[in-house]
Image 1 (tube, rainbow, N blue to C red):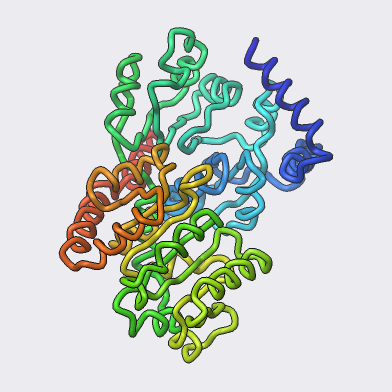
Image 2 (image 1 turned 180 degrees about the horizontal axis):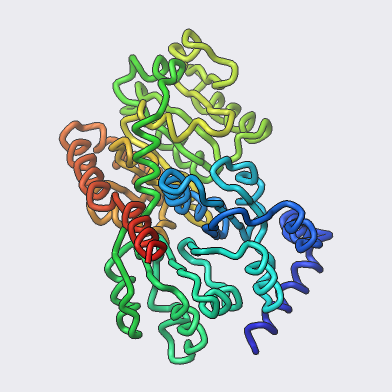
Length: 417
C-alpha cells in the first residue's frame, strides 16, 4: 500500500534527522523498543478509554472529555497517547490518565501490537489525527471510535477526486463532533451523516478555568489603579515590536501592560525588559518573579517570567493581545475570551476557527501595523465599543459551550449498548 510506503519514508527521514534535530531525536528515542517498555508499564485491569492527541493544543481539546469521563467512570483505565514530543514532554505526568505514551508509528504491525496491548473499549481522536492503520484496525475490532473538535476544509484530500483512500479512513469513525456547520456540510457531501455540530471542547475547558481561577494579588495590585490594563499573551519579538511602537502613542501613556512572552526563559525575558526600558525610559518595568505588590503597583510594565499563570491572569485585563499572528499562527484566544476580553492579534489567524468566529462577530480584531493596533486599542478603551465586543464574545461562548457533554453522552450511550 502506497500509504505504508510513505510512512516508512517518514520514519527513515526522522531517524536521519534525529542526530541533528532535538525534537526529531526525542520522537525517535521516545518510541525505541516501545513494545517491551509499554508491556512493562501497562496492564489492562478494567475497561479502557484510549484518547489520542497530536500535541499540546489537541490535548487541551481532549482534556475536558478525559476529565469528564474520569468523573463519570472512575473504574475505567484511561490511556493517553501523543504524536509530538512537545505534547508528551509537558503532559507525561498528567494525573487523570493511567498510562501516557508516544503513539508508535502508524505501521500495520505497530497498530496491531498497540491495540493488542491496551485493548481499548472506546477510542477518541482529537481534531486532525487520521492514522490509517490504527483506524482500520479499530474498525475491524468493532471498537467505538469518535473524532472530537474536528474541523474540515474543502482542500483536504477527503474531498478531492483522488481521496478514496482518505474517505475510507473517515468511514472508521462512529461519530464526528465538528466545530462548525461548514465541516458538517463537507462531510455530508461525501455521504457521511454521523455528524454532530458540537463546537470546540476547549470552550468548556477555558470556562472551567475562569470559574476556578485563583486570585493573584500581585497582578491585581498592578492593574488596580490603571484606567485599563492590556494583557499580552504568548508574545513573540514581532508582536512586541508592534506593541512597543503602538504604546508609544500619547493616548496610551496611562495604559498598563502585562507581557507574558511565549518563551519565558531568562534570555528572551532580559531582551524584552531591555527593549521596554529603552523605549520607555521613564516607566518602571518589573518582573513577576522579583515583584511584590508594592513593586507591581509602581510599574507600568509587568513581565510574567514563569509558566502556568497566563490563563488565570486575563481576569485583570481590559483587552488582550495574543501573539503568534506574525509567525505560524496565533496562540490561544479562547482563554482571554472566557473572561469577556476583546482579543487583538496579528494577521495569520484564518486557520483558527475560534479566531475567525471572534472576528466575524466583532469580538476579535486582526492588525498588521502599529497604526492599526493603536486604532483598535483606542477604540476598545471607549466603554461602548468595549461593551459591544464583550457581548459578541459572550454570545459566541454561550453558543459554543457544551461540546464535552455531547461527546460524553454519545460515549455513554454506545458503551451501555
